[in-house]
Image 1 (cartoon, rainbow, N blue to C red):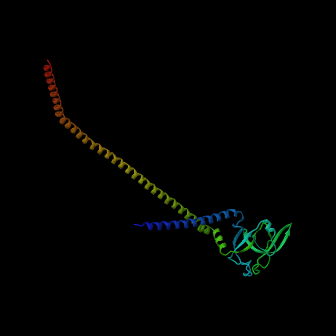
Image 2: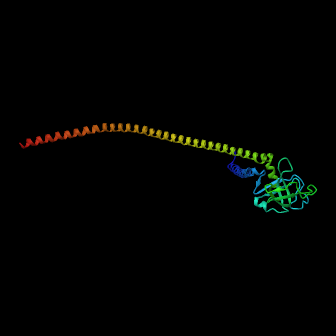
Length: 285
């Protein structure tokens, strides 16, 4: 059998484990909520925004002229760009590296990131002429100018670790591994806790019911014992009464001859007095 000390150690260990699991579960749930909410809010943009920034995986070396430069990057890098408002877009200048929707690279629009090499005003509206820094791949400016609606953000740096995680989370596999599976495990854990608490409650209830039954049984036994004691007292008193009655009868029987003798003595005394009074009468005559 387990000693009380061992049981206490196990309880402490279980409490610490539960606390750690609860903290991790809360962190995972908050992270999952953050990812889902960010995805829903950014759904109409075509990319996910986290705290004002979005992330993209570089698909070519068009900006890999000199990787020692802060704003140069190569294929496979994850870059961050700050999402711009219309007012911020209007303040862009030559030399800024911008991320924009490119209508020429594929059948559908894709995000591309190049440097502004010229700004034009067409019909009173700004247009940005862009070009990749790697002139071997991009010998000249891009085919189409970028309008304000095409521009999405300005380059904010490379993010090899956090960016790759977020990019992976945006994929179906990443979402399933890091969001769906942990959430399912958390639900299973919570259901397990509920079942364990219900079992603990049922056990406590059974213990309390047992204690009530024991108390009732004790009360019944006590009442029965008191009843038996009262009955035994009554039985003891009855023989005493009979013996006292017998003693009284014997006493009366003893007293009867004494009473008779006393009465006889009184009668004799009365006769003697009567004879003496008669004698006196005669003498007086």
